[in-house]
Amino acid sequence: MDLVVSGVTTGENLGLVLAAFLALMEHGIVSWNSLNPRFVQRVASFVNKSTVAEAIIVQRALAILESIVLLSDAFGQVVSGQVSLQVLTEHFKSPAAEIQLNSVTLINALLIKATPAKAKEILDIINSRHVQGLILQGIIDRRRTVGAEMAHQLHVLQPPGLLALDCMVYFAENHTESYNKLVFENSCRDDQYVCPFARCSIALTLLLCKMLQVGEPPSETGQDYHPMFFATPNAFEEVFCVCIQSLNKTWREMRAIHEDFDKVMDVCREQIGMSLSHRPRSPAIFGAKLQDYSYHEIIRQIQDSRVSKLPLDGDVEPFCGLRETITPGVVQLIKAHRLSHLVKGGLFQKFNKRRVKDKFWFCRLAPNFKAFHYGDAGEGTTPDIDQLSGKLDLADIKQLVTGKQCPHMKESRSQKDSVTPYAFSLMYYPDHSLDFVAPTKEMYDLWTDGISALLDQEMTSKTTKKEMEMLLSMEMRLALLDTEGLQLPSEPPPLPPEPENYDFAVKL
Image 1 (cartoon, rainbow, N blue to C red):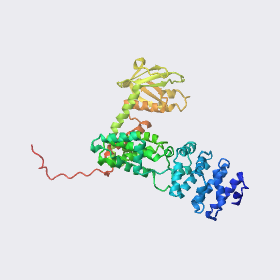
Image 2: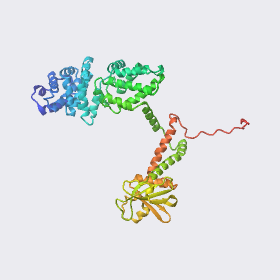
Image 3: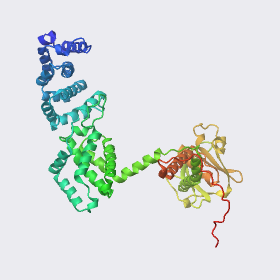
Image 4: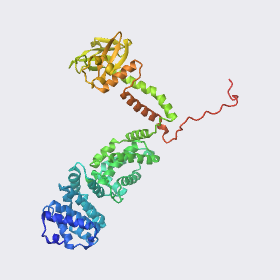
């Protein structure tokens, strides 16, 4: 401490001395209450004279002052009186991340130990437009990602909100036009459809406090913070104003009555939660996100979530029966898609014993599904059927062959294996073939599946199997949507025994 107080040690050596002092004190051998008052004042001066002091000295001094505030009852108030909040917040502009972090950490420590009057004084400075701009631009925007510890300190620093009545007054005084519009709109509704402004304001304030954890002690590990609370003064009140207007809109969209109050608040909770997840930079952007999550959009997402959570156990008999019932329709849907793709046609590169570059031909299925039409075509063109000179009737096709079984693959031994998987041929009478090489795996699957469907054969590509599973799952979940929460039996119920006689039958 003498080395620091005397002023003999300066520059990098002073930074090392402060680092060594902090390391020794962390062992807990010496109490923070046993410090020299002149030492505390000297360390505080390093922070207040940031334009002169070197970065390493400021960084270590901030860390020491934080520990003094939190761990020393004797000198905590000395630090509070010696450190200038205006200078401290100017450290937010420092290019050194460690100085920014230690500055925010020291402010949080001062808030924790401050009297109510002192805390209000600190919060007034933190909530000023200038300081919030420093936090937003100097800390949040400057770095691509905010470190875990800085995120935690910003989480602690977020300003608390006010009571519902204060928020209502703020809305009326600062957004008078929107307030008058909301009141006038409700005055024109039937009594049963009126949105109760006071009740909604109270419930909304409680909801915001709960979602933002206002009034709760900061978490030791929490890293959740919202940039919009550092973007404008009175951020909580501004968020309330945005939310109360959204709540009124949701009430109107739901055509809610007083008995639907809890349902409306549930929807609002979802809207606010989804909007907050985007981490909007200002209340205005937050309001725009709320507009994206209308009542109908929330209902759609809730239904999608419910559908995705429905259990589908393929080994249980009811699910097996449902799957068998749905499967033919799904197969027909995929088949129709494949045939429509063949009707649109496709452009293929010519392929023979010597591959001809930049030469293409086009093939398409007739709309009546009875013949393939084909012929030469330029790259990027889509000829009409009348422009295609070749024709292959479906009745003449004997079979579909793929890969190395294709005649043009057998004839060309020098072709690379990478071409072979996309090759397929239509064998037709008497001993001819129409040979294809698809440019992509997707096109290969679509064409071979479509041709297999035309020939009443099974579609076996991986693309079809993937689409089958996806569509079957979706159709089954939709069919089971109304059974959510019900315990479905694993076996069908037994048939009741036959009656002793049928005398109860009506005689006409």
